[in-house]
Image 1 (tube, helix red, strand yellow):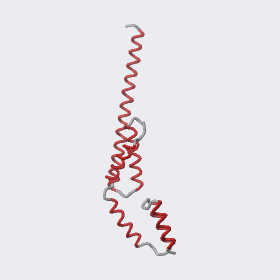
Image 2: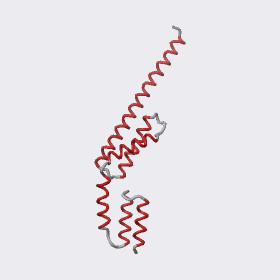
Image 3: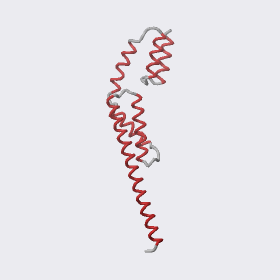
Image 4: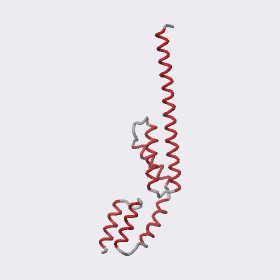
Length: 144
């Protein structure tokens, strides 16, 4: 074998080893993202009404999905699958979360300022969305 052939084989061998190392690192990164997502889903099952935890889980799920698609982005299919996972983790939380809210609304302070402050608190905690907040705020103001 001449020097040129030996050099070419050496270059091919090094390239192959580098390719294998990169693939192993990608697989390890994917597995770490998968484990983080699954752990977040478990946390969410324990605290299904926590909006911050729900966002964290969705974010970790998107990272994992992106890695499974070779960093080509998250597809609509992935988004639906993530929401299915999150909805399954929070199953039953709607009825449990809604009941205390209606009790809290019935026991709210009578002054307009106190009621508006309580409503702002609920919005800040993510228990009331923008539309609900605006509607309830207007209702409180209309009762003056």
